Length: 293
Image (cartoon, rainbow, N blue to C red; front, side, top):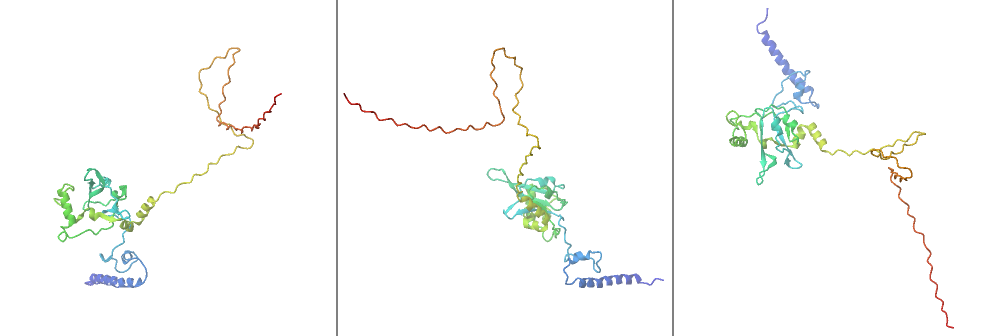
């Protein structure tokens, strides 16, 4: 015969056991340099509390974790890497990227710099195609997933006003009858430094730095000339072949045919010019004076 309330007492016992084992587990690792408590609580060998107390505790994210993209600013040149080429907007599967290119006010020619850059996080699928296909490494995937907010608290912000103005100017299409507020990121909210990129993606940053280094010039190896085998003479270079033409008739008897000049592929040796022989200079003798008779 089952005792009334035995299940309740059993459940309270399990709760009490987890409560006590939680403090025992914390005392066990006190003073040791171990992983964060959030990682330790997810260990199957852990005893006690197994729930991560978010937001006080957060699981560390892997390096390849990706969320809403962001634009990279080159701090060494103090300029944006984005050239508004539009490749990211073309390869985006849900088409959540809109770019407005800057124009020169005088010549009206396009300038390689985005005037406006918007990403709608409400339809972004976080696939990372924009970062993979960008030829300038100007857009990367962020790891910040805490983008929720209370619309009644902070709906009308500067970003929301900029989005509303862009929608009015037909730069952005209207989603759901109006702007989405802070969930559409503009250029100001998307721009982050390359130092931030190096912090969250160290492997990717190391690859970019290695690609920027100039490749070392390869030294030309000396070409070894094979010596002829013993008892064999080196082949003589063949002379230039004469193009074959019609055969000439044999010369008549008694006609002397001049010999054809011998054409050699080897360059003629320079003629040695000997200095002219010195001719001895003879002085003229003095004329003799002949007296009159």
